[in-house]
View (spheres, rainbow, N blue to C red):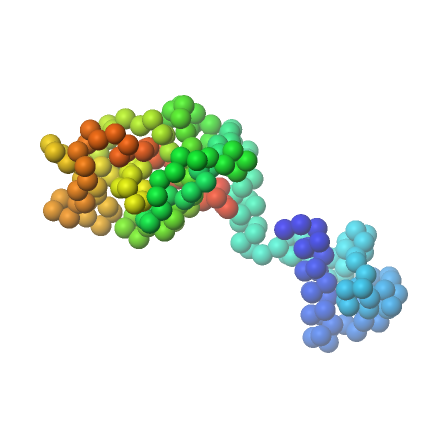
Length: 227
């Protein structure tokens, strides 16, 4: 939300009050101390509001800037401010999303960056951010997250960890179960049903495991959980 957007919303509120019969143009102009012609041109879009006039209108309507914003905008701002007050650093995004139907690409957009908590710096030196495509088989683990931090130099050490797995046609997030001759991928819905796990190449095949999930978050709100 920028200043022009706030002004436009304030004008809409004035129009609504006049349309509802709470004020006339003349009465509202008198109440805020300007001419009827001025307020008429503002409501038509022929003139813009000055900062002083913005303040006068807000005072007359008994509003603040917070009343002009939507609840979703306020929540997003508070969450973002909370993240910024914690120690953080910025990581770049992979250009391609991660998820079913999207092939693996390590290409990075160095201009596209996002703040992440400083504790992640201890997770590894080869960290990268990525945006997530919808994956219905991992709804519980991803829990509505739309961004993720990967360690691109992972070591498979935990059966509960989430890994970035390159299946060839696409790259997905799964738990990994190594076998004697194959690698098995477990989704949220079949963790306790090994017979349903997806079988891939041998665990020693290079390039199958592209990274380990270290952090999941929401891009717009800043909410997150460590992995």
